[in-house]
Length: 444
Picture (cartoon, rainbow, N blue to C red):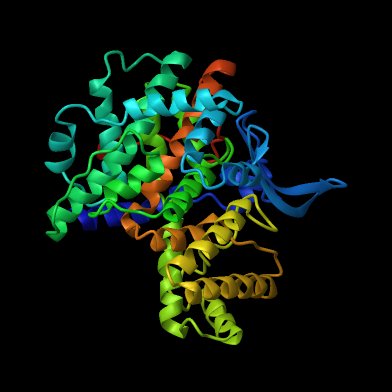
């Protein structure tokens, strides 16, 4: 009764709610906050990070090699500079927050502060995570972050300095929350053995994640280095990506930091944003099962065309891991992860799969251009799923790991907006519906 009535009402409502695409052009409204050439509508200024994927020549958008800058430093240089260090993410966090690279003693002090914040509040693990396991870990992260509000003596203080302290507390605790939420889910729903490892203060965030996730607590230096790099390349991506923009919009109302972080996590959960890495991993698995890792480029081209024709995988017509809102020629994050995957694939005896990824990337780009006439590059999701898989990280944790990394970017933009804007974000829409007369109930 209820569902039928709602379905009928919803169907009837379409007569009143349809907004044809030509109307957006007629009123010069940027649908999806995109310009006609696909570039994003500028909604703010930032000194936190910059995403470069195209240039303008004679007023026209032209493709360009992708670059990502954190506080003006190329992501390639940041990753190369950290070398084999497992604390590159902590160095990146400091850079994004304060605007400059820390000296050795400053980085150590910053690491100590984060390590002192690793521990969860008393009974948080038992009461919030083990007694209330969630089927969806992103939802669990949202609930847990909002719960931290209750452990804060002054949670509604939105002063920029105190926001930094609150944000670092959330960042330091998220790895434990993520790992314990996963273990609780596996124990409750899948009847797996439950094991809990507490974070070690001497470990980096990347090391602790591997330590807490694995029953034997062991990991290799190369594994820790790769995960640390994954966190670095996911730490920020400009102020215009959906989850960061969400954070700043919510924060502009002067609400508490916990609410803004929960909003960002909800945004990142979406398969068009952070959840795309899982879809890419699932797609590549389906492709390998369909044609095998030794498939020819001709076989690859056929399956790519089937994907584009909505005749394979989820029939969405999307090649997950390909294409980006900004990058056109290349995604610098994908280039970095490609080389790290090449190195770890040798250690893991998965060179054949890695070479399959390389060949598929090439064929997918060429086929897409051939079919659509548009240039496309792979994006960070293309190799991140393979990297996580080599690290034996369950797919349930792909997007939560993205959350752990991106928390620092959300925090940096949140603080920047508090300090240099301060107004509530309030864009406008134009009403294009019809004017109706009210008809009394008995006369309808």
